[in-house]
Length: 81
Image 1 (cartoon, rainbow, N blue to C red):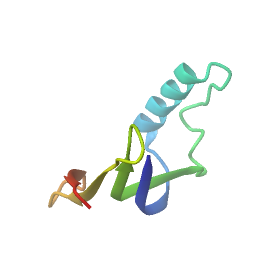
Image 2: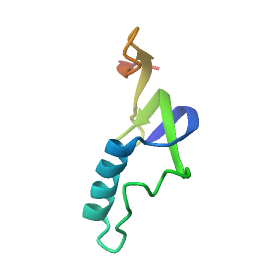
Image 3: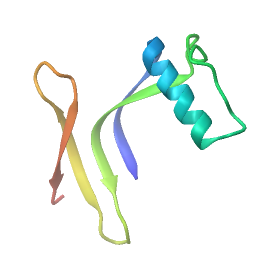
């Protein structure tokens, strides 16, 4: 998968920091971060513009991402090119 878009430094709030810490600990048992581990930075947020994904080469699906007005959430639709 290739994601093209704008990458910006990101600091999660306390709730998201807790969710991230729980997810990391579940996936990587030897890495158990605290919810405040990212208060000083260290995370990157990517606002996707285009996503390329494939299962087998040479075919690929490209999605161009657009945000709905007011919600800031990117939505993608398949593109033939």
